[in-house]
Image (cartoon, rainbow over all chains, first blue to last red):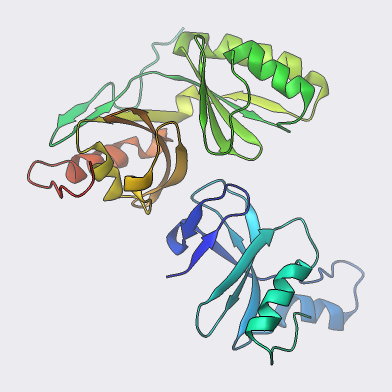
Amino acid sequence: MLIFECPYCGVKAEETELHAGGEAHLTRHGAGASDDDLKSYLFMRKNPKGVHFERWQHANGCGKWFHAARCTMTLEVFGTYSAQTFEPPAELVKKIKKKRPDWEGWT
Amino acid sequence: MSNAVSALEGASYQGFAQVREMGLQGMITLRGDFDNAIFKKTLKLISGCNVPALRELNHSKSGTVVWMSPDELLVLCAYDKAQVVTEKAVKQFAKTHSMAVNVSDARAVFTITGNGAREVIAKLAPVDMAAFKKNEIRRTRLAQVPAAFWVSDDDQITIVVFRSVAQYVFDLLKTAAAKGGEVGFIY
């Protein structure tokens, strides 16, 4: 069972209170984008075995979307952070790097 | 004017705790920036309260304010005053990016009263009810539907749900509060 702390209401919410929103920090390519860009935005996902950045919504709660970093293999949660950002906070990246030295980074 | 009735018209059930639909309750949703001066002033004007702290309630003589999310509050007042009060707030909000809506008829309110009130909730929601404080509000789910609740008195919990699921929630609470179903773990 995944437990995330919602950065907006501070509730330690378990999975059934949340709604998964897929991979985080995608660049949205819209009208006017090249076919390759649009294809990668629509279909190409990392699907890693290990550290993954995701979007989650506190659906049965305050209703806000937030970001979470977790391990897809062990379900370890590294942290959650606000949705109003384009990249994970440096502190969190550092923390993950320390725990998983051979992790290749978030981009 | 039509005759306003609540979802279950005050239905009640006595198990190891008492479940009761509370009838008509005035409820106004406010959305906006909590730091905005006009927002704060309007809240004070219509409820007599300041903006509550994270996941808390504020009370005054004229009303109660419930923290719902970082940009949403629920004002509780008398049912027959809700529309007038909402209009007052809307007028205040004319020039700010804020919103006031009368949601009284969109919701249903229940209370669970008795020693086992926390236990009834604990059976239905993913919340640690033993650590749940008085004056704390929690938005979560009751079985399959969204709900908000708070401890309104030492042995009483107030629950707010959407009106459309009022019967479902009442049936749930009845089952969870049925005699013989006491767990006796949380008091």
